[in-house]
Length: 155
Ligand SMILES: Nc1ncnc2c1ncn2[C@@H]1O[C@H](COP(=O)(O)OP(=O)(O)OP(=O)(O)O)[C@@H](O)[C@H]1O
Ligand SMILES: [Mg+2]
Image 1 (cartoon, rainbow, N blue to C red):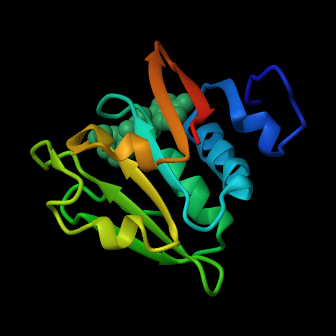
Image 2 (cartoon, rainbow, N blue to C red):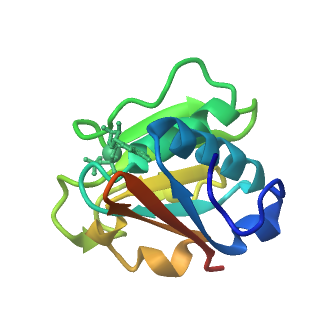
């Protein structure tokens, strides 16, 4: 079971400012799946946390919620994974680990970010200034076998 103050409530208020503890990848995926419900067109989600903390695992749950076939692959070698989410809206998953820190306007992904679709970004610190344009901040921390997943609505 995902540990959280407000169990069984999975609306936008559950995710506005909250901390969840998961103990398995499955629970992290399930949390991503629940979180996907609150995502709206145009949302940019920042996924922070060290290597292997669970950012891609969380994204897999989001992708599942959008009823895509299969899980998100690690996007370490391609900048953008694209999913046709629910007809009109598309879901973009970006892993920017290999990028040098750069200005968000310089690397040609702004057309994804500002496309009125939904973007989840791993290693968003590579994009200087992206915080100002983002709706959600998610920070994942390893605590032994557990993952502490802090979700904040920032805009
Ligand atoms: N509670 C948990 N939630 C998520 N992953 C977990 C958990 N417990 C163990 N794991 C393991 O931690 C790893 C998380 O990997 P994942 O690819 O999701 O991390 P990441 O944050 O995307 O890393 P990277 O920065 O390298 O892309 C997996 O091997 C997964 O099995
Ligand atoms: Mg990853």
